[in-house]
Image (cartoon, rainbow, N blue to C red; front, top):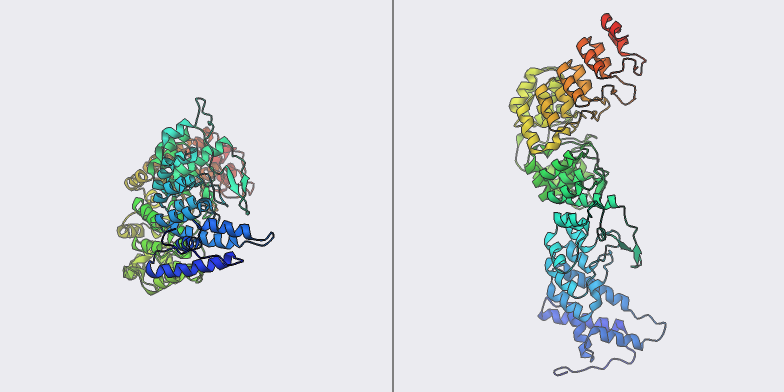
Length: 622
């Protein structure tokens, strides 16, 4: 080789000796070229000893090695693998190509974490490397060692759509899951025959896994309905409306538990696609189900999941869609609590800037600062705690750090007691109190619950906007309609205190709001999620509203539903009898109310009528 002085190998060469030479050569090369890599040094050492490549030099050493003596190959390969993956993470195509020229087997060499090079390129969103790796023999079907994702399915799940298209251009065919996640509705439809049965090739994602030793293991295929339901999940997660509508025609399980135990509706709210959300609700998706990780309903999951994961852009999108989510409480926590606990400073800052209450306490009475301080060893938690402790980024006096639980309690007591002057003075000193959720309901709802109309009017004048629960309780049809236009799922939302909009509108006798909610799909059979377990019909009976009760019954409200958790609670008929409401009693009886039912005390509706001085009605019920 012209220009090269070939050196002879020592009498008993070994790999450790050559590795040392390669490292020394690398340091030498990097003095003149900081971008030099180990593969460059290995090639130089190989050529110095008369070999065309490092692979051929290593093979020569292996041939000379006495039987039973370890070759040292694993150690060298691990170094190569680490450098190779580093080049992938940097999208350093030149280094990737040089290293593959020296050692072609690197193209499918697994990282210690079970990743393949193609999966690494997908995970780090490096579309430029896809064609190179595929051309060099990268395995498009290689899955993570501990999951079922192929490069294409992981690209689709990660919303790395440029990478996904690069894989498709490289000849990787999508299965149903991938076609759905990419939103290719025609491709999705093509996986079903004329009778709606799945065609061959609909499922390939996760068809194999690797064991701890790197061997490929079989993975039993799921049922056809599971395949369709999983495809629905990813179409919902990625907000692909047309694909969702195609899949809904083929009988998916709308309660299917996908990643994090979320249903398709949970992931539709995560995507923020109103069209997908509406399609699922119209198909009968249950908006009251909770995921397995955060225990959130779908609407709150949409912001709570990205907040808990630190995804700033997703949280920003959800707040742009619905600003009222900023302090939404579900399962005793708000997005700020989850972000602070996870050490996600970017999300914490975003939420505070959007109006989140830094003094809001979770179900255990802890603020975001308390939660961040619980995990000082977690990356990011110390920064979150320091940031929350040292300053409020907007300099708002209404969120001063010395607002205490005692102040919140005093404020709520003043509302309940109808102390208008005290309420006004406390708000003047601490405007942030208006966003208190200490007792599971907003101050204006607490005032409404306790019949303090002057305080309701005072608070309403200070609030920039009402949420769906406040609008329902106050009978603000216009606001409720605007909110429902933006998010149809609000018709079945559940407040922190467990009540839904339909129950609130029924209890406070707002028939216009009730009609609106019913028209938007509010469930008449949904009980409150608190210990009272009341249904809208119970609320209508308590409000003595025959009109609303009739509206609910016409929509199929359970006429003999029981309150409470014992299974022996009050029925609507008992409530009507207790109040002496003959017209309500007759309406309920017409719709099949059972006058013989007894509560946990053994009393019938007739007994309650007689005990409360309604003898004629008691006789009527006998």
